[in-house]
Image 1: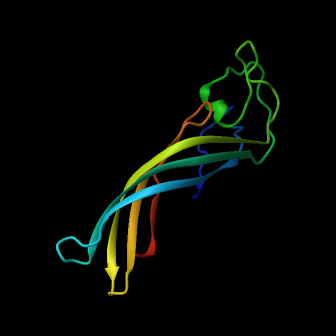
Image 2: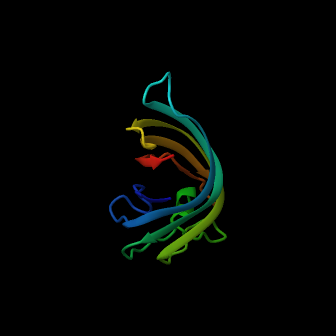
Length: 149
């Protein structure tokens, strides 16, 4: 899975705010329990769940300066900032940061049979949770597409 996440948090100063991007990559193995047809209809349902590896990569697109004596907050760890021993943000810019972690996912999906050849249109939603450093990664994507089974 790949998902481009939107960094919408004002990090340092409400006016002088860095822009950047956050990408989440995941490789998971999942079990799917499915009911292909509900009461002889073309509609089906399934539950899916499993676990795997999640990698979150953050990059800051422009340089900025942290005002002196800016107090550290947990959200700064998301962006890869470092804190000094006194509890203040170090006044240096970090361009990118990556974090790998194990995680789990679980969700539900719905299918619609297309003809009698085994093709189905599906819509599913999964809750993903990864034990990332400092800030856990949580995501609920909605996926749709075609499947053959």
